[in-house]
Image (cartoon, rainbow, N blue to C red):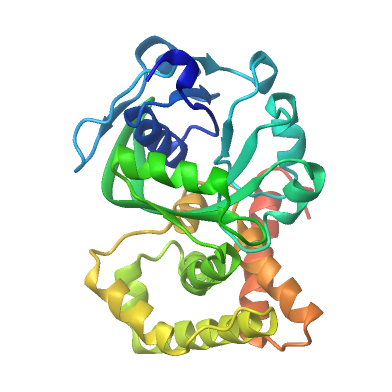
Length: 319
């Protein structure tokens, strides 16, 4: 493979998830560049140091950018791996680097998170990606990959076109696995079934880990009720799921060593929560389809109250 043949990849949001898939694509022979803000100096000087059951995935990106405006050559694939948060303009963030042939790959949590990007770039292929991976940042430019790695991906809103298939083949070659599906929105709903119950409930539990949540009969009852409401909303949205998945997800979670999910970690560290992407959008879709979701709505409003209280303590008006 010559330099001119290599697939050019730009990772925007090179944290744990973004740098991991960047490493996998680098291993497959792609030219990987990154937009890296918090660890910019370390990554520019030393690259990423990454331990993994797959071996040493450490790599040095072709280019390390502090901002999007520095990227003057549009990539073949732009992997957007930032959190979907209120007030974050993802479209404005990536626009300087998107060219006519750039495929935009959203490796992000949540449901209904693709539409605004697809509407902003109607001439580009938008690929929705679901990372099935356990990976964490353990220091500046230092990543620990613990388990899994598969990326489920497909064209948004449906289909499995050439760009998705090529990216899946590169992920396979790099050792993580790229599962290409023509029904990626349905795949998002299946992941949402777990995330929409466990992530917000972990916050209400003060940052509870999975062992704490599945180890309590009353909490498991609430998890089941939340997941049952998600199943109803998904069906109304045209993506029915087998209710038996609830039992399967709970049983599988019990087999894992207890761990804190991403929302629990964000809450404990005072970082913004992906509340609307993971939970709020489910409630919005429920309202559009006339589905009652009283438990999901109660959890959402409770966490909003916690956020308002935290904002007040951090500098809001004193009462």
